[in-house]
Each structure stands twice: as C-alpha cells, then as structure tokens.
Length: 300
Image (cartoon, one colour):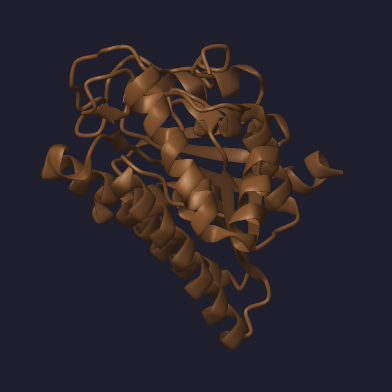
C-alpha cells in the first residue's frame, strides 16, 4: 500500500549525499517516486542519482547549499522543470559542532544556524508557496530530540532544532486558520542515530565525540519518512529512547535535564579519548562519510 501511494510522487530531499538523506532517496525511488536529491557534494549526488537510475528509478541531482536562499529557489525550480511539480519536500540537511559554547569559533555557531535553521526556513518557504498554489503537499522537517530536550556542548545545534520545531508549529497554525487541509507540515525527531553526522561534526572538546547509548539504526528514520509522506503526522519521535525521554521530560523536566547533562558531560569529557580540534564539515564539505550508516553503533 505504501509503495502504491508513493508511486509517481515527486520528492525533494536535502542533505542527500549521505546518512538519512541518502537512505531516504534510495527508499523513495524504490517505492516508485521520482526523487530530487540535493547537497553540497556534487560528485556523491551524481553517483546517487546514477545508482537510482540504474535500478530503473527516476532521479535528478541538484548541488545546493541550503544556507543560500537563491540556491534553494533554484533547487525548487529544477524539480518543477524536471517533473512538473513537487509532492513531498524533506528538509534534512544539517550540521553540528560540539564544545563549550564560548570556546567554539563563533563563525561555526553561525554556520550551524545558517545550515540547519535558515536552510530549513528556505526550504519551507519555497515548498509552502508551491503547495499553496497546488493546495496540496507534504513538508517534512527532519529535526531532532535535541529540539525537545536540551543537551550541553551542542548549543547552536540545540538552538537550531528547537527553532525548527517552533517554525513547524507556527506553520501548522497558519494552515489551520487558512483552511488548507491538503497541505501538511510534519516534524520527524530522531534520537541519536548512526549516520556520518558524527564524522562531519565540528569538535572543540579536545576529545573524540562521546557516543551515547542507545544509537538507533538510520533505517528506522528512513522508514518513518516514507510513512509520514503517505500518512502525515504533526510530530513523530523515532526511537524508543526518544519516546521514553520525552515522556520523562514532560513529567520531570528539571530532573531529566540534570541527568541528561551529567551523562553527556561524562561521555564527552571523562570517557572519550583525546582528539584534535576540527571544524569537520561545518564550513566546507569533506569527502569522508558518504554512506547511510556511520559505523558508530558498536562503539556506542
């Protein structure tokens, strides 16, 4: 039923060169959708599109830095020119940097906000204009449980994810007031997921990034994206740990935040091995980390 519902749908996915975005592109294409994949790493995008076409699917690769509004506008136009319209837009591109707030270079905090929050806002803007014209469409923002439950040392990432969730809430309120029942805005919030995100993250702690347990399989997030594209829901938390944490936080927010902060500090500064400072892929894309999984689950 899901594959039938997705057949011939047109899906735009940002951050598609690796991780959840890459997995989603392959899954949507195998379900019969035409996919438009976007990211900064053009070579990986073109290879992904070629893989999809080799399996008999339809794909268009569009290099795009989502922090640039003009490039996101061009992405939307390319999708419409190639396939006539867009049915599902997935804002998935994201970066992060870990470290004491005032020891991380300000330019990297700003870039996290530019990519995660402004990149999502740019995608929402072009998608919502298109969906309003068609009076139908599904917008999916890949957020994080860090948009519900704050954690130390990921300050700009947390700020961006809280803002993304707030943006989606505001858009849903607008849709209810304007009666556009065919347009949906969905927030998908994974708990810690095994993707190359941790390979790409900036790190100013002086230690390797502490990996929390449990770390969920990216396939669960991909399956959720397909399900939400067919049966839209306002918010979906992916991973049992996230659902437990969300419930506990609702019941005892201060206690949960204290425990979460202590555990994050322990993982990052007491258990992690020494490591050099790095900006990762925050400012500029890097070639490593091109798969769906990051290979961290056993380490966590």
